[in-house]
Image (cartoon, rainbow, N blue to C red):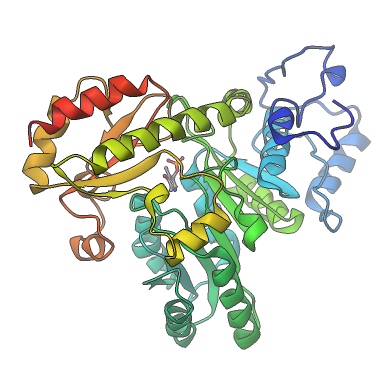
Length: 419
Ligand SMILES: *Cc1c(COP(=O)(O)O)cnc(C)c1O
């Protein structure tokens, strides 16, 4: 498709990044199963290496992809990067072989030894492990924000971090996994400006958008510098692949792509092709899963064995969480936690009775998944830090799929009887 101006996102999501005219009219993108690309001449070889290693992208424009060796870039990754950038409202995007590879590349690209890193709480278990164990080897110290909706609390954490060292990055996860806690991205971006004015280096604000994805939240429009998404979840959408993406301005994305070559974390051609295809139906899947999630959240709210339902759609009108989520989110997503009465033993009894809903970690697939975060996804987070943010023995996380909602509710009802 040559001219895509004025088209709706649901149209672009099946078109952006691919032009059939370039590929023998093939309606669907070919899969470029090759590790390397031939040069037309020795001079051509030199020219494209110069273009790759020497040129920085022109201001505001992604660098034209050069194909040399598939670890650097390849056509299927380029198509996906173009489409993802379009969905996130970004100049460019970089894809990685999983979400954690994307997070790792961001930390390695933009942090220096001795830096402080400011983050919302809780963060994904893998991100928590990276911040609190691995990065300490480089003298990097994490500082958690206790309330990411409150300017005072954000500034307090920022001052503690600045007292320690240069603040190199601000990592935001909103809604947070698994608590659905909301962070005010615009407010955090304004505090990042204040940090920049004080320390002479404005840290990038990175938002992990995995919980909602591009059809329900666009963090770049609210002041984030980089939007990171585990494409394993709603984008892939079928629990059959691992992938990650980062969207943002052409400059930092170029930096991430160059580092990706050195880290060896490029997304392979087949998986890029699968994610590109999955993006075509993402808006349909997120819409249906969202409807199912609302019905399930309402069922759980009214169930006597359930003590709380942390669903974004239920934030108190007038509360900061409600005001900020109304501004930032176009939907409530379909992954949330609820609490049962009776702790781990009751939770395990209930989980072991489920017949339709699968017990597994991960989220965003067509099938409904459930897990007990304290003993699975957040097993490795020390209990004190886990409990501070409300991930207790009573909490269960459900990722609602696209099945018939009555079957899901019936399954939950019969399983809750075990409590
Ligand atoms: C799954 C997940 C990640 C990590 O992504 P992978 O693709 O599994 O590496 C990061 N952040 C959040 C919020 C996630 O749910």
